Image (cartoon, rainbow, N blue to C red):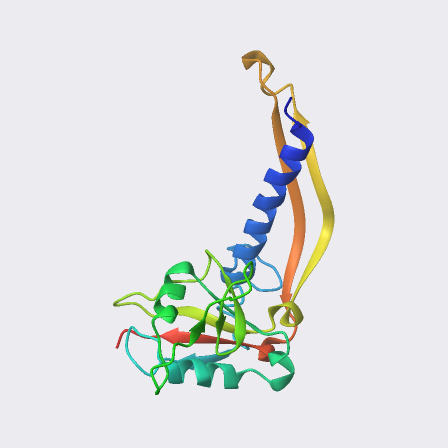
Length: 193
């Protein structure tokens, strides 16, 4: 038997989390506390331009880490996409030691310059001929606050699909995302020229 209730909770939960992550990172076109910009476009978040065109260097990561207030380094994480992870896995320091350290215990991601990282589908990639912000560092849990304005509601829409012999479900969530401490975050801007 299918446990439809648990299935719906899982599917809607994953969808809500993905939507909230996207809104936190890149924003929306809707008006709100972030005015549609997300963390990556927030004017008060620390920013650093890459030293090389269309590339990330060892020095860039050191400088980006230094842009975050010391208070924000406790519990700080790197955030980037899966393709950027592949780029960082290949970076080495001045003594040919890799910056990316694998997890030797298992179950956790590796580390970059001693700090853990998170992967996000909403972080931009490093692209040729484009200016992007592919890497963020800081304590996002302290810098960005999520406020649940109205609880999650799931409605059964039996009448709408009755003629087809189906039942639909609609989930709704209302929340706000506010960057309360932008100096606890820093983003790297990779330029094309």
